[in-house]
Length: 437
Figure 1 (cartoon, one colour):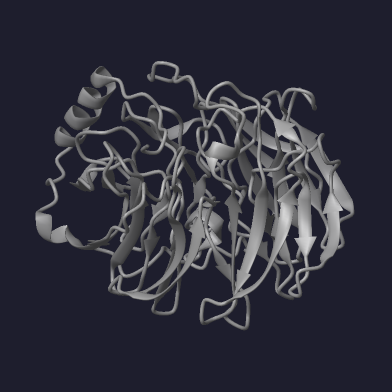
Figure 2 (figure 1 turned 90 degrees about the vertical axis):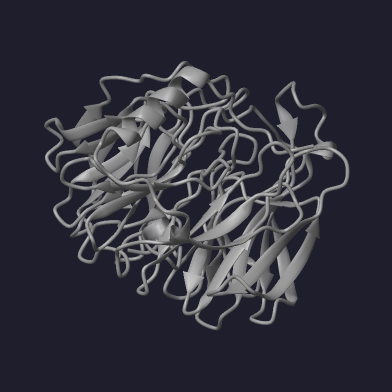
């Protein structure tokens, strides 16, 4: 059974295709897609690739009943397999991260056949953090979600439990709380109460080692979520309650890390990183998408440029918000589900993926004008954030559609890497996905 995904509405897709075609950017020639890698499983879903040196790390996400053959892969820069680790029915949920010794960490959830039903929800699950060594051999696993807990459906139709890693190689990962795990697999501390606190907003780490993440409300727990900051020892620095039940995106920083940005509900919040007080709040004025049964108005993480302008997608519109929060630089109706977090290239293009089958689903958008420079069709929904390397290659993963395997693609860009001097040029703060500023 193919991966579950949001329903696709024909009219919004027509809006997207027409919008991209009318903006003066040339449709990408087939040569922009340099290579694809497609293992015989149902796809990568929302997972973002991690690129360290000349290696690419990504895991598959097969969500369905029956036999599932998931795996975690280390690929070279041309997408040849260096090694793979079989996971069976466990799905990889988020980006991977490497420590200073080249060990690899990623999270999984158990196969959906172990859930009481799809639907109804809530369901029970088992989530684990994996550590593999540099050769792909298993070092240990650590359970981060008690299988006895039952959580309400998050509304995003995707999970993101991407781990963050501190300068001392401590791993921070969500689940039934925020877990701090030592390199040997033992627990340093956990923030939250199992069965009450649910964390699927991957943590961001500032230069001082402080942590920022979101908690989600769910049936049987708190009604609303919060933005939380802890110090490296797990002590609470501040908590900012929101008026939404679900916080699923990773926070981003301003250029000087004095501010942190998080999308919650229909708003973008800019908070003082030291105190959690509101600097400004921007409420998105429009949402052209019909309401999906399993989506949030803002599910993607924002990107922050070198002037603290903020770029983020809502369900059907992509926004460029002014650095002071007093309005928009521009907005771009796209008419499709936006789960992909943008990446900022040093050619001052925004690289973005789209959900929804049909038309073009990866685009380079001009930062200043919102005009499309070019588009690419990967023939699959794109929910992860692209990674862009110094040779101008963009690595982007796509989920499966219509029973076809998902793929990881190399797309030729006009950049020579991510934009420098930014707050957050990409999801998880960079190609390495460390979460660290």
